[in-house]
Image (tube, rainbow, N blue to C red; front, side, top):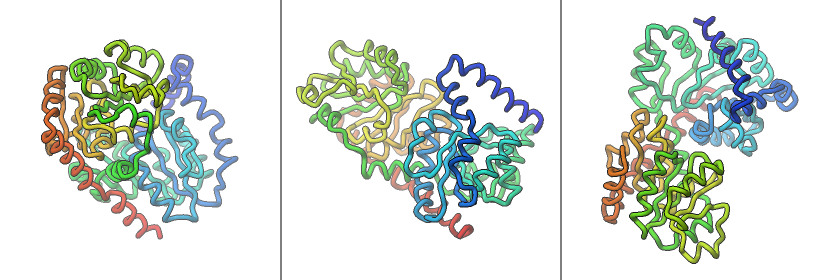
Length: 413
């Protein structure tokens, strides 16, 4: 199986080499790893010792960020090194001030893993949620370097729990300790003989609660909202935007903030074409004076880095992605104590199920269902009750970071 794994890595690299000529992210992935070891060697002092955090992408970074920032305070004598697999994580956080070094992760080959570990010489490694790389994990294990997986989530459909998952189970054996989100994940790991597991919960709750307590302020957005009720739609895709556009035309007394998942100019123009003419304005073109006149009904966010704080202005949130591969971050909105609406593809997301169960979340499959939920939310009492349920869920689910840090500090000084 290891032979097939190594072959698969080579095929993946070959495909990236081809697609870089046609795909921006593939090009960033390829260029970001060009001369990567020379970059690492020139910046990292291998004698200093570091704590290595690896994140697949931006979402995992935000998920693991509470642990990273607390550990930076705990271990002031150690450097913090971050690696990303995806350009969508690296390119947005390559200048993050909370780390001493930030790199792309070299491809998982035996030679690369040996060279990387030799150069950075980590004192411990922390991976968030997933990404199981055989050669990196093996190198850490063989050198007795503690390796922790935080906010892990496991499902029965994964290869670890199948008859053909021998190599996958071997990768798990290299992990020093697992911190998982729920009892189901612990039971699955226990069923294959993995006992070094703690149910800690999800560190995202700590992150979103912290963000909601001190969100960024945007004067232009505040001016746009005025005294109106506001519907905030985050990380939307075209399928979501078609449904939301119908709400705009029907609920003219509401203001709408839409933050699309993709902000390419053609995507923004396509969104504007769905909306009532003359009712939408792009954030990049907005001015406080114009917004103060209160003529615009829709504010389209055409830049990045704002969404997690935009929910503070909302009375209702809609989270995109549920008509595609899966919904985006519902917790960022729930942390502000507002009802959360999302599409039908949410079954892999424990927090979405929990929000539905406690009355803070609502799933819809078509325009009529979205209209029905929106109509219910016109009742302020109903809306407030749902929002309080969402906020309560976030507050009661905090604490994963503390559990993880207590365990690690007890065993690593």
